Length: 426
Ligand code: AMP
Ligand code: GLY
Image (cartoon, rainbow, N blue to C red; front, top):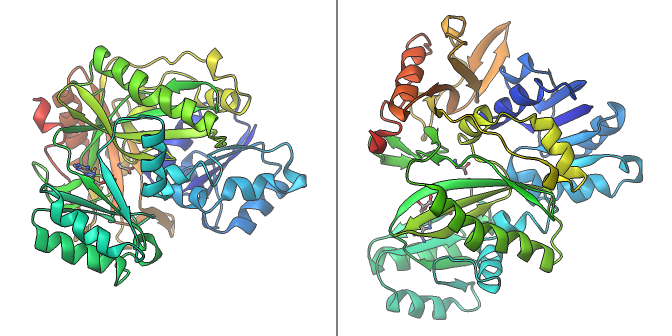
């Protein structure tokens, strides 16, 4: 098969690493990819939002299957765009339709969907300029803290948790009246704050069936013990010790099955991954958010734990035959630790040479590149999250220690990483 993978992060390197191991893979292209993906296939020089270039590549390179990594092209309708061209009748795409991707693209859409299909989530109200005054009344009557969410995509920055009314009202005004997040905050969801412990659960669905992938927990704050600013993710672990069999069964019955059934009932075309951002309140799962893609860096622990032929799974999804796939997981713990550029998640410099990649013991650990690019034959930094190291162990502690040990081999100017990934499970 000839496969085109869209994206450039650690998630895409993990996908490319796994797909390139499949006997079904004849040729793998990654657009635009990074210095790591170029070891698994051929990188192509166009962005995930250049729909015309993507279409041209599918035609010229006789692509059989497109796997879409990030949410942006999905929310903008890449799937609908490609399938509407009769020249691409035989093309299969893993990634939902534009309307299916609204599960991530619009918080208000996702909340209404959950409400309709009785999927547990925080109570909420939805406001625009038209009912702005109602929003002010809603905030003043709300218990603290208050969670404000820009409706649309805001590069992971659209959620603000306010500890007092003054802050909540100011934030509400900024979002709606002053377009703090542009179009994305023309509508705002205000919701109840849920107190609990978070985890991520993933399925691949063909619209009819689904397979449950290994669950994971990511570490979003830049500082140790979850302090400091939010990032794209500083590390992840899988499996998650508190997600036992009973809890995961509960998640399937109360969250996953009603979501798949709801998509079907509402006629929302969906062939792809659903990422359930969950919070465990007491023993009960609540949905904090849906994403229409896999998580990053969660994928860098989920994919290495997957023993199945990943491409075979994707093909089964395109044929609505996921009922024939039985997921096989590595029982060991996997962790990944992300090395980031100095200053991240604020301003940072790019273009520093990355040394020592060849010293990493690849029998025990896997290097997944994120923000890297090849320049003059050398890997150099090209983003905030630069690369991560995934390792296995019989405990989370053991896996994390191995990743940290291997990271000691790697250097680039300004590099840092969290040393306490998985700390609460020690
Ligand atoms: P999101 O962008 O929807 O993933 O939200 C970002 C983060 O805000 C989540 O990972 C949670 O830590 C937090 N969050 C979002 N909604 C809530 C909520 N209703 N209660 C508590 N925390 C929340
Ligand atoms: N790690 C969180 C995300 O991918 O959205």
